[in-house]
Amino acid sequence: MKKARFLIFVLLLQLCVTLGFGAVITYAKTRDRAPSGLVVWGQNFSGMTRSQLSAQIRERLPETIVFQDQVFPLSLDSTYAEIEHWLDQVFPASKGSFMKNVLQNLTRSFRAAALSDHIKLDQAEIMPQLESISRSIDQPARTATVEFADGQLIRSKSVSGIKFDIDGTWQKLSQEHQQKQVDAVVDIVFPKPSTEDLAQISDNLGDYTTYFNSQDKLRTNNVRLAALALNNQLVPPGEVFSFNNVVGERTIASGYSPAIVFVNQTMIRDIGGGICQDSSTLYQAAMQAHLEIVEKHTHSLPVSYVMRGQDATVAYGILDFRFRNDTKGYLLISVRTGANWLRVRLFGLADDKHPKLAKPEGYPIGPESWDKDPK
Image (tube, rainbow, N blue to C red):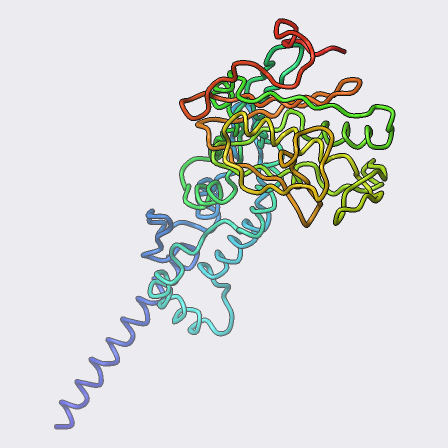
């Protein structure tokens, strides 16, 4: 019995010595190598030295963003610092007794899975750089324009813009582990209105002229200011045009003067007096064009420039003149003033409900001379 116990003891001792010796040999061979099972971005990096692993990881990180002929280098200082911290965990420094280091080395393979796929770009470092790059790449879209001048419609073409997709580019960067360069992700910005949208503006749908006393300088000033605000306004199809929103609040700071207004059947002076002639003339043109009137109010007293009940008074924040562009295309509002007249024209796309206007109303000279406004 004693002999058997002694034999078991000897065998166990021999096993421990063998395992210990094997652990020492393994430690000597692998302490400076990446542990078995270390996988990053789908590639096995087992057995590499620290310098080899560092070089391989850095080689697989994208460092530049490319857009057309522009190249934008990225600063990865923080990312590289994180890589070094990760390498410290992959290759822990020896400390304590020799046998403790040997035992620690035996557990490295078990910890390799926890260390795998932990390498990534530092988003906090990259995002500010992407925002800076966007300022070099972004190109605003340019909308098409159209205006009526010298008897004709004058147009400019639209140009599409470019918008750098910061989030999309970040996602692409964070998933790229092969190429050093990454193409910028951009979106095309399509202008509105486009050249095609405004090409439909071709027909005169409404054309109305009213007159004012040019000797009343303050009132005339107000009429002209409102006309400038209205001129060349575009109304998209289906949208509601608001006189108050376009002309804005009538104030001394914006150039308006005190002139006669009607309030509760009484004439008083107030800032912006006279601009109701602009809204009323626009209303007449809108009626000619058979547009849907959304909001319209009449004065408490008759006015001199249109027939009774055919006026459209406005008061900022209280009374508005609004109509809906229920045509099939954009609508152009053209407003001109002369020595004593105010002319509003509406150009758009004619259809059965909104036919092309046969002739303007209110203008004092023959139709053959109406194409060009007197200077």
